[in-house]
Image (cartoon, rainbow, N blue to C red; front, side, top):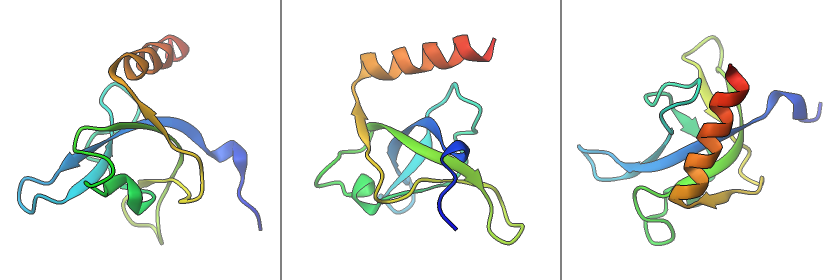
Length: 102
């Protein structure tokens, strides 16, 4: 069975350093329907500090899923295109997101 393109949505995410380990992880940007504590499973290159420093924001295509009834998380296929967002683009995306929700 192929991927269902209708299940995937644009989501703004950012890389953040774990305060305990210092390793980067990806989380949703605040201001969307997803909690910033939600886990994001995506390409490993997004958490490569040599390529993208902590605080880099990305626009990805992700779907909400769970594995065998576990905690929900966002899943982005590792082969999908990823767009790096500058501050202005991120704010514009979040503003447009809020307008569509009203």
